[in-house]
Length: 239
Image 1 (cartoon, rainbow, N blue to C red):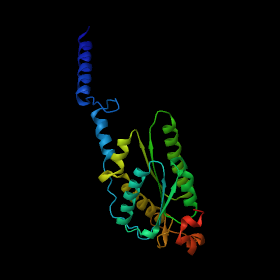
Image 2 (spheres, rainbow, N blue to C red; image 1 turned 30 degrees about the vertical axis):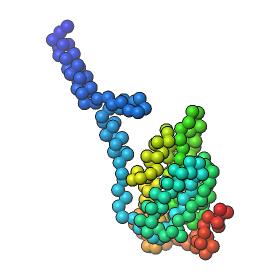
Image 3 (cartoon, helix red, strand yellow; image 1 turned 180 degrees about the vertical axis):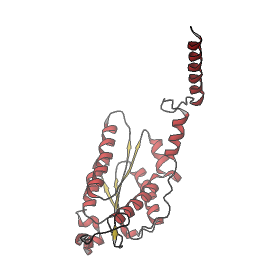
Image 4 (cartoon, rainbow, N blue to C red; image 1 turned 90 degrees about the horizontal axis):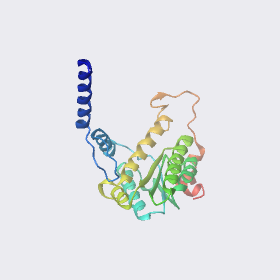
C-alpha cells in the first residue's frame, strides 16, 4: 500500500473513533440506543414552555373530555381549569362536555367550533397502548381529525390527548407539577388570543396581527351575540 493510502486509512480510523467517543450509546427503557445528541434534543422537547403573561378575561373556552380513563382525564381537567383561572377566564365562560371516548373528540369539537360561541376548544382524553393495533389506529385518527377541525373552522382545537404506552406514563403526565392539562389550558388561551387578533375580534380596528382592516370587513356575528347562545353555548347547539 502506498504512503497516501496508509494516511487515508489512518484518518478514516481516527474519524470513526471520534464518532464513537462523541456519541456514546444510551440504553433506554424501550431498547433503543440514541446518541447523546438525540438525548439532549429529547430533553429539550420535554422541557417546560414559557407562555408569558396571558389575559383570558374576555375569552370563552370549551373543554370536551372523554369518559374512558376517567380518573386521569379528570385530573387533566383540573390542570386545565387551573391554567384558565390563572389567565383570568371567568368560571361561567368555561364549558365542559363529556363524551364516550377519544375517537369521538373530533366530531364533538367540530360541533362546538361551528357554533361560533367559543374562542378555543380543548380536546381531552387518554389512550393507552394494548396488545392490538387499536391504539395506533385511534391515535392517528384522533390527531388528524382534531387538526382538520381547527383548520376547517379557524377555531383553535388543542390536542389534549395523552398517548401512553403504560399506566405509569399516564400518572406521570396527569398529576403533580407535570400535569399536562395545565399546559393545554395555557395553549388554548394563547391560540384564542392569536385567532381573535388575526380575525379582528379584539375590539380594535384591525386584523391580521395588527394590519389595518379594509372597509369591507364586517365583524358582526348575529349567532355569537345571541343572548341564549352566550348564556350556554353547549345547550344552544344541542348539548
